Length: 476
Image (cartoon, rainbow, N blue to C red; front, side):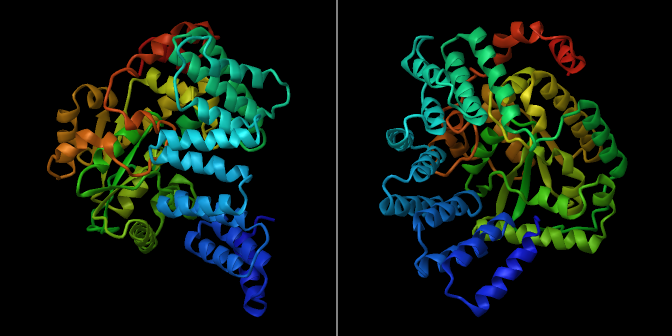
């Protein structure tokens, strides 16, 4: 019935009376994870292990996911995945998660070894094959990895999600060797498969509705907040990085995270959770009582302190927080906000060629991505008018072409001194969770600039669409 808090309470009551029930401890851990209670989830899984639960490798896998995704503890995640494999050397999910963790940590060879082992266990596994393909580039359309993926696709035995995974991998390989016409066909098929796989879990996308949503936020937050509400001197100090997905936000965070005074927080989930807790509606966010807003602000900071106890400045890189700048400024009136911007068609291509979450309902077609771009631009134009001194736009192209000047400008905006380490961000050993994990581990280069031109012919072959046609006509 989806009544997770009540289920958690029921399990706690049960286990208070009958603590020696390992499966019930497991279920409590699972439910706490669903509710975003990471520490409580780990504690419940610990109890399940102490009481000798059967299939303990699954418990270690789930605990590793918590350490990696919710608690910023990649070393503990790695240790638990290795425990799972020690218990069951044929446990496929552990190798897949271990490979992904090695990718996050920038260890390409270790990731490759994990995916190869997964494919030894199950040669048809689409996740392992697609991730393995993503570790390299194709030298020509006849590359052996392209042939291997084509063979898997021809088997006729794939579920829609697995087929989409492999088509995205195929498209990226074709793109890497310059076969852009074939890549466009692969990406179009991949997005079609992804849409089918997400059927029932993704709402239909409407560009006009998103523009209406932007207007509703603008109407609800029509004047700047008085700077007497919220928390004026938060500790740690949050810095919000937002904008369009695939517009350079991860690159900017990696650069800033190499500064001695800044901790890269990654894609924190708190602002959308707070918005949801306040009712999600723009008017409700704007009208929430000041004491409620302050309570949420304190909870936000407590969560950040739990994740990064030694931090003084923490980046919150959540691109879709562009909807919630008004809420952010209510909680933290002095918050500094970095808006990453990029050529709209390069952004469009980068979104369209990735298998993104089904929650991003606009991500399946060039037309819908173009519409979303216009909604995001409209929203950010409003926030920049409302808070002109507190939002800094950071163009991806300038960051790539003139990195030192741009980094100095950003750090000056944050009232921090320049440090040369920021220009050597790619040497960092910290975990990076992003679809562009390998790009942000390379020195800066301008190869992605103008990438859209490789797909211009394909985009112009599509039926006319107001938003896409406007972008192709230079209107953005």
